[in-house]
Length: 154
Image 1 (cartoon, rainbow, N blue to C red):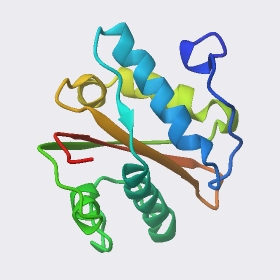
Image 2 (image 1 turned 45 degrees about the vertical axis):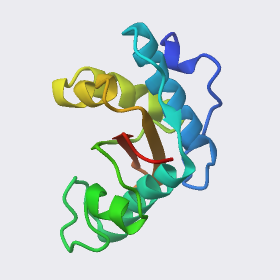
Image 3 (image 1 turned 90 degrees about the vertical axis):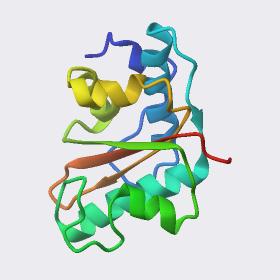
């Protein structure tokens, strides 16, 4: 895995959920894929990082891993976007979970790019902005959420 392009110029992050580096690593990895496809890079947006952080923290706290929040508090990504006052034309979410500490983002990107629906989110030309976050479950699994929007008033 160490020869994949996501490792180049992207700071390493250990298995902790405190990292301000998670959004930067996720953004960098996504923009490598968009560049390979001839698409404009995503802009990062701290407000979307907060939405993604709310999603992963809720999954850790609630003991689930899914796009649908079982107790609907705070809700799915669309509900959390609304709670943060973010209006958009298009929105989507990719989730990943793995135990690969220093390779978490690399492995997540490989998985997303090998999944047609996740790949479609990464390469959808209507999405122009993204936010990302990660949190660690008690069992050590790293949960990642990436929230995409297009047409949002930044």
